[in-house]
Length: 558
View 1: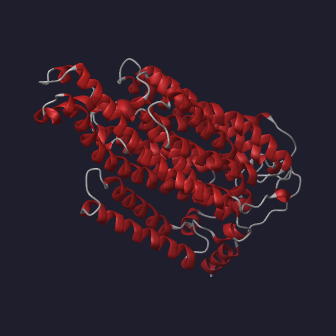
View 2 (view 1 turned 90 degrees about the vertical axis):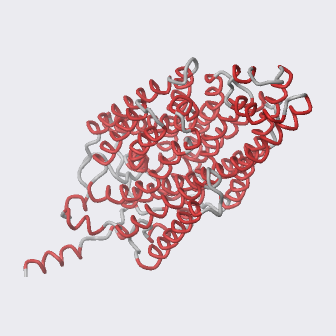
View 3 (view 1 turned 30 degrees about the horizontal axis):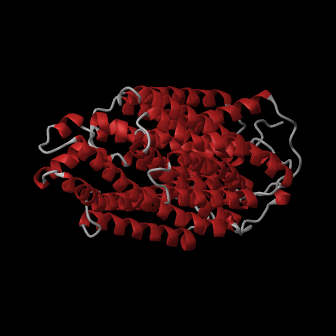
């Protein structure tokens, strides 16, 4: 009899997807507690982006010290995969157990992973360190959710804009610090990840101390067993295994296996089938799981936000993985200047984020900035795809264009997704948009890597041979010449018979041209997807009525 009463009570607990709030003005002004929690959230975002840009920009430095350059793409890939597969479960669980300890404990994983990367003696160890760091990104959606829900909805664009300014500051600090440390020796990456680890550890402690909200309704009323039953375990299984296998298959394509090889086809097909099963399960069998159907019922903004964030992953990871590499190969020998070039993205993004925070809060217009983002992203990819060896100066401006777009768009896409969701689903809505962003980045990185490797294999040997053999290099020593040239081993180059300074110069020019053509394929692929998303972004609805003074999750009962 008692068990029946308990069962009836559980059934009468309101579902998250049916919990509604009355949009009244419950805002009583900023206080020290709100400011400190917001700053702690911004600090975590800054620390996370330091690790992310480091994994992409300094991958060559790590490979130069520990070897394994062909696997270096996994340094960024594992972050994208883990953000994708950890974010939704953590976001859903946070609605039952609260945000505080998920954010604090997962951020502490970033501290541990950074120490592992800094002590790496092989590429596998460095990748393992990034796997541990990747767990910390499961808290990323919660950080963005907390920054929004502790402030009035009217200020939500400003809240997201401030977090994105912190993201820019973290990116600039990380790039310039890492570049300065690796300028004289690739071993500088070790000190860089010690710094990243220290910041992540401090961020975890700060949030644990400062964020002390009252328990949420379901957090206080349900038992742990009841909470566990509410989670979408089958969906998590499909998501995790599907994304990992699909990304693994794509990453092995052309690196080192052909598309028709079983190493590529088996995980690729298995992953695709599992992801299709996820779609079927979440559509027809699980209405209140990760993809809670209430998220899509109000208007089309949430679905559009998912698509745009998927495209943003494609955009950002293309720039993060390949822009710095192209600059260092074609135009720069100083790592600090390479870092400065990438910093143009963040230098431009911060004022853009500040502007859109004020503009969108005042006009309640979020559609125009999102359209502007994908216009500028498409222009960036067109410029990079048409770049030549003489485009060194122009490349500074190209990255600034992408930065302006990023500052405008990210703020408003997150705002659109959160305002389209019921207030008690803000965490899972944030989890989904960041998950699909990482899914887009994970898939895109693998595709970019396949395009880049295939093009480089096709053009490098042929191009160098046609440039140096007519000048007198013996065909028999061509393989040794290419190996020494690509590794920048001047001593080995000069020891090769029939080599002259003129031949080395011609070979270096041909090598740069082969890289230029290979990078072009990456930029074209990203540009096409960016243009398609530009068209879709025109259909966002401006949520004018929702940008009011209601606070979804006050920090105290008063």
